[in-house]
Image 1 (cartoon, rainbow, N blue to C red):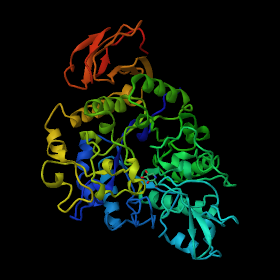
Image 2 (cartoon, protein in one colour; image 1 turned 120 degrees about the vertical axis):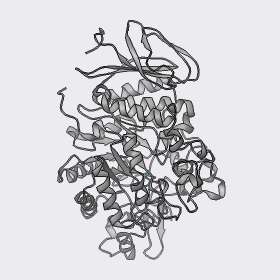
Image 3 (tube, rainbow, N blue to C red; image 1 turned 60 degrees about the horizontal axis):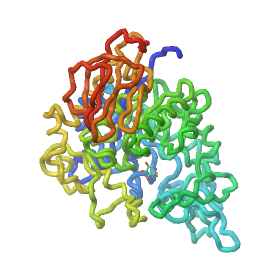
Image 4 (cartoon, helix red, strand yellow; image 1 turned 90 degrees about the vertical axis):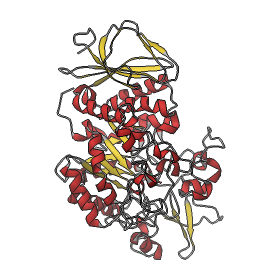
Length: 541
Ligand code: NOJ
């Protein structure tokens, strides 16, 4: 493969900010754009390259901003349009990039497009959404389910038709078969690109097209009672339709109307084979279809190692990998695998080949917070109260220091903070060399310094039911061996036919740093080593 110069979104690191919860600047208890601006120093100090903001646009907040009523405005809760301009400028002055969330699948039911569409069957925008007559037998148009529970069809009394919503009924799906809808959304992209944003994270891209005949989805044979109701059916007709590929290519085309390296990141929860199709033919689709394998797989070394190879093997030529550990929809990594293993997870995320995305707060080991039942805000939690599906626990305010409300707000926070914030916070961890934050920062800094880590090849070395290991190398630069124990128990690393020697650059516990290692390593539980290999070893490039 030709050694072409890599783009920033390949060598860089993306950091997801959930704006409601990052920093409040005006005491209303909700984070805002000025707050993010005030905290840019932290992000620069941490060493990340790009910030992705979850939606900050006008919205009735039925789904906390993923129900947009104006794609080119800013919700007053988050500030004024000028605050976004100021943030963008400050981000750029620091040599960083800013990505916005693009939500093309659905609007708010309060968006002018929907209000118009709903106003009458003859509305010129009727066909901007998905409307269906009631079948004669009184049933629903088909059996499709909403991700947030119940049927995906909502009856509109005044106009006597159903409209389709993949998520809440307050989030009607746009009709992407209508070229006017396509053009309107491309113009939204152009609006922000013109302002200088560096790209988008595209919400539920695999949902935007639906089977033209609206055929019923088949039952899911693996459905179990504890699963979300949506999983009762396999969404084979309501998601991942072939037509999405052309739209992805067109979205990419819109980015390419602008200079600079703008990036298209796509939210796609699909098995590897389907996921990689979102790179598009000749890589003309999304630059980075999000790879959520690490947040879906059991924390099992062998399974993870195998899946990394499957993913690496399935990537199209020149398709660039990426990795995600947590986001605003899923449990935080520290709650999934525990505090000790979250350190190993950080090492994995930041040493694998491909662009890492860090979820705000993971860098200090924030965990999911227990939210009392009567404080639940998330519609997914409220709609399916018996299934523990609320996403609030992973969306709690950032823990900046040990003072009131962790300095997130002077007011009353929209969601309660973790009780542990007096101990687990940015300020305390900055002063502590063995903190999670220090580990993150050192991993990031080494990754930035070492071409093998930011752009080198990936070769798996050995994995078993406790550990996994791999080498990162790039010709002309030092190579690194990564050995991670994904359990609490000690284990040996002594792969057959693989004599090696090197120096430990970073260890999860800190205890090994500076030690020389060779051939056989007895590794403590919860330990991980990032080893700078001595030059001239037989297996190196
Ligand atoms: C995915 C987003 O990440 C999630 O937060 C939202 O609820 C759904 N899409 C609907 O927009």
